[in-house]
Amino acid sequence: MDREFREKILEFQRNEITEYHVYGILSKKADKKNSKVLKKIADDEFRHYNEWKRLTEEEVKPNKAKIFSYSLIASIFGITFAIKMMEEGEDEATEKYREISARIPEAKSIAEDEVVHEKLLIDMIDEERIGYIGSMVLGLNDALVELTGALAGLSFAIQNTRIIGFIGLITGISAAMSMSASEYLSKKSEKGGKSPMKASFYTGIAYIMTVLMLVLPYFLVERYYFALLGTLVVGILVIFVFTFFVSVVKEISFRRMFLEMLAISMGIAAASFLIGVAVRTFFGMDL
Image 1 (tube, helix red, strand yellow):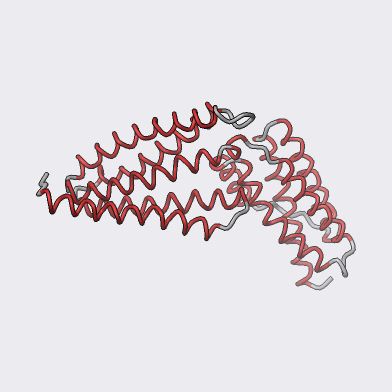
Image 2: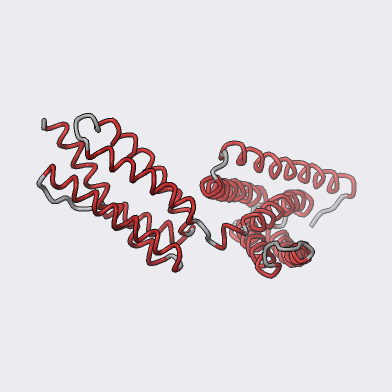
């Protein structure tokens, strides 16, 4: 075994022991059903590590940074998101194992195990918050569209950041409660669907969190155009993060969803800003 090839095997070995620890941590965070699957996968990863170890005859330490990052991701975005991110690594590992299977026959069986892992991972995903992504999208998107537009219109019409901030906060919270109630009634009318109470909760929380982030710049700066710019930047970041989350867990196009949400939110913000200009110009408002 030449040096370059040995380094490649050691890297595989390091990935396996790292993923053993990651899946072990995720299994402790998961419910009973998913925990068993994750524990089995962790055991398989440890077995793979020992198979590589027999070839290299060397102990390898796991990547602690990767273990920490996936544990943090699971805590913030949920186990499903972390698992989907791990799947990408499984796909890459499978291809690399197949490439070297001619020289190392053991690599083929390990690659087959990785394919099984992927299927198990897809089948096991049953996290509550993922089932209510539709409700979360409803709350977040409605808050982005309505409040970004309202703040843009108010910014030029009023030009007082504190007043605009309080109006936006009151309007946003009221709208969140209204949207949450509407989602509750909508889900209650559906037979065999999601829990109306939980759907209402996820919609309301997504709406209120978005409202708080969007109005924050108006309480931090005095010049309305800087506050509006801050709100637009926050809005774009919220769209980016949430779209990335949904695209990963639902395996849909990130670019298409991001551009669609961005165009709708920013388009309405621009239209509302022009309405604010018209109101101030024709009615002579000066606050």
